[in-house]
Image (cartoon, rainbow, N blue to C red):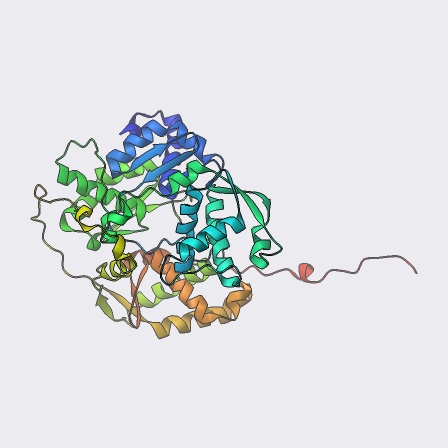
Length: 458
């Protein structure tokens, strides 16, 4: 591992580079900022070898891009694409994004927004249930969101005009974009030809060769655990297979990830979490500013107080088994069967074999977690709104149900709760936020009332 041999004065720079590439997967001359690519290029050789050894990831670095190809151990619906305004992409936006990439791959150096829309509309006609009608405002807005996602990553750059003007009135507005072909090429690089897939699971488990002195299966298991540490907010031992659970408890394995990322691991009996005070690895900062994050922290504190009240114990339930079949079936149902060539769709063993891993570890007892009913959650958010609502963003002051849903979604993405029918299971990491102290800043009277200016005698 190269991080062990890097001079202590340069180690911080290397760790920052590792965090940037793990957090973004695609780095361009402008994304996520203008200093990221030079930083990655400086440490390209060391990063390439360390990422392959520790995680089985492949890193490709050119003069204009750096692209990390991660290995997915499972499907994760918790990291959706988002618009510039931080709205989650819907199916239409994803479809426009994919078709826009296809069109840009065949375009020249520049393209107007209307030309790109025409090409995407033509492609959309070949997809059942999809249409891009320039005379429909909702379609134009969704298309501009997809183009904005590409622009944010440097695939296209606005040369002239205004996309908002075209979205408002395609007859009057127009925008011209420069195309960065290297970014377009780097963005879409599936591990297998999509027309040869009979299931989305065929995109999982693309391991690269890594120099590990242990047996192959043990090396695969170690990489799975390291990947979980950098990809999940919290790694709960109960979620892992017995062999992986044993590896998670090994100080050496966790220390390797700490050394690469520069983060500190917080260990508990229930699992391990990397604490990212730098903000360069996490896609969600928490605690943070903004109404949703602040209400989520307040709600977490209220839940912790409820759960820790020994005089009024709450109900406890085991976590339900969450097979991936629902998400797999949803994605697989969208595969056009006429393009599938099954003989080329070899199944991929995403977990490897465990023949040389000690499987004598006893299965742990089924754990139970506190369960809080949905009605209590709704009432508590309502009470928090009554108490602190004047400090909330205006859109949430009048939409408590929407606020509740977004806050619960945030806590679930952070793996602090798990949504169940009728309520929430409270997971152990939420206890980190018990006893949260709230300070509401109020304006001084001198800020509220401005003394009249002395303008002298009339």
